[in-house]
Amino acid sequence: MERRTFLELAGAAALTGAHAEAATLPIIDTHIHLFDPTRPQGVPWPPKDNKALYMPALPPRYRKLAEPFGIVGAIEVEASPLLEDNQWVLDVAKNDPIIVGTVGHLELSEPDFGKNFDRFHKNPLFLGVRYGNLWGRDLADELAKPQFVAGLKTLPDAGMVLDTANPNPKLMDTMVRLTDRVPNLRVVLDHLPQMDPAPAMASLRELAKRPQVYVKVSSVLRRVDGRVPEDLAFYRGRLDEIFGLFGEDRLVYGSDWPNSDNWGPYRAVFHVVHEYFTAKGRAVAEKYFWKNSIQAYRWKKRAPRQPA
Image 1 (cartoon, rainbow, N blue to C red):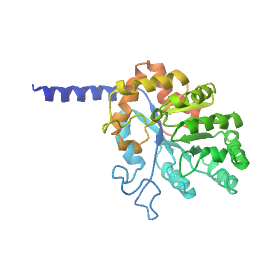
Image 2 (image 1 turned 120 degrees about the vertical axis):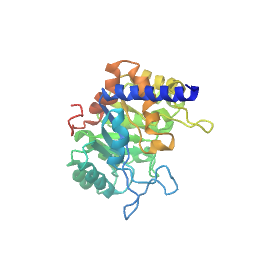
Image 3 (image 1 turned 30 degrees about the horizontal axis):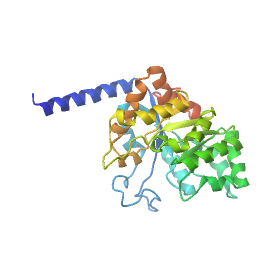
Image 4 (image 1 turned 90 degrees about the horizontal axis):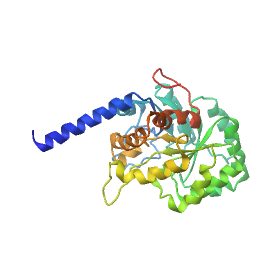
C-alpha cells in the first residue's frame, strides 16, 4: 500500500473514531449564527464579498454538518442589530428543535427597551442579549448610561443572560465593572481563545472569582503566517490558561458556525476542543459539552436526544 493511501485511510479511521466517541456524548453548541442573504431585505452581516459566509445559514444546513459530531442542540447568537431580526430567528427556530434558544439584540438604553424586552421575553427560546465590541458600540460608553444599567438589571430578574462580543482587554476591564454593578447577572464571555490573555490577566483573574461568569471556548482556530493550524498542540497553551482560570464548571462549547468557516471546516473547529476536553475524562467533557450550558443559559429540552 502506498504511504499516501495508508495515511489517508488512517486519518479517515481516526476521524470516524472521533465521531463515534462524540456521538456517545450529547453536545450543545452554544454559539451559531442564523441568517439568509436571499431575504428581500438582505442582511447586515455577513458582507457580500465574503464568499465563505454569504449564503443561507439555516438549521437544516447546520444539522447536516453538526449532527455527525454528536451535536444535539444549538444556541443561536445574534448576527444583526435589527429589532425584527430577533423575531425572524425565533420564527426559524420554532420549526427546528435543534435550536434550543437564541441570544438576541436589544438596545438596553433606548426608551422602547422595556416594551421590546417584554415582547421577546415571553418566548421561552429568547435566552438573553449580547453586547460588546459590535455594531459600532463600546460597552464602556454604554455602561456610563444609567438607563443602560437599569436595563441590565432586568435580565437577571427575568432569568436571562448577557453574552459579550469579540473580547479585548478593554472589554474585560468593562466586564469587571459591569458585574460589580449587577452582581447577580449571569455573563458568558465569548471567543476568549481569540484574545491574548496576558494584557487582560488582572481582569480575567477577577472575573474568574465570580461564579456567575462563564466562558465560551469558541473561535479557537487562529491564522498564523497565512495558515490555520489544526493540531491541538498549537492551541493547548491558551486553552490551559483559560481552563486554569475558570475551571471545569464554567466553560461551554461554541463553534461560531458559520463564521468559523473563515478559518476552517466544522470538523477542524470541533476536533481541537474535543481532543482537549475528552482527555480530561468523561465527567469534565460532559460539563464542557452540555452540562455547563444549562447552568449558563437555562435552555430547555426540545428534542428526545437532548439531555435534560
